[in-house]
Length: 102
Image 1 (cartoon, rainbow, N blue to C red):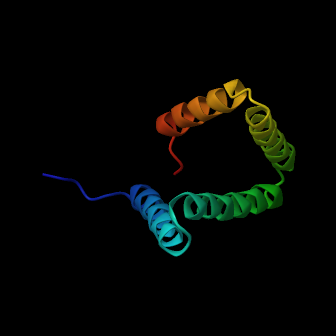
Image 2 (cartoon, rainbow, N blue to C red; image 1 turned 60 degrees about the horizontal axis):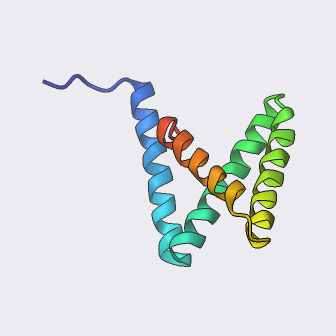
């Protein structure tokens, strides 16, 4: 028999469902890749603002470094060297599989 969910478990499930439904809506409106990217950017902007308001201003430096890394990977790939891009994609898949957003 299943036990009732705690409030924390319900909140986590509801938040996960919100992420999934938001992503599905964005994909429906904008297409698969672009919709997914825009959905996660929207969620990231929300979290950046919350973290900053909570006094963790280093979140902006971290976000800037992630953006610089992504730009570097795209530029290296465009220049004919896909190693950084491939490593970034592999690392991102591994981390998000091990620690999915809650």
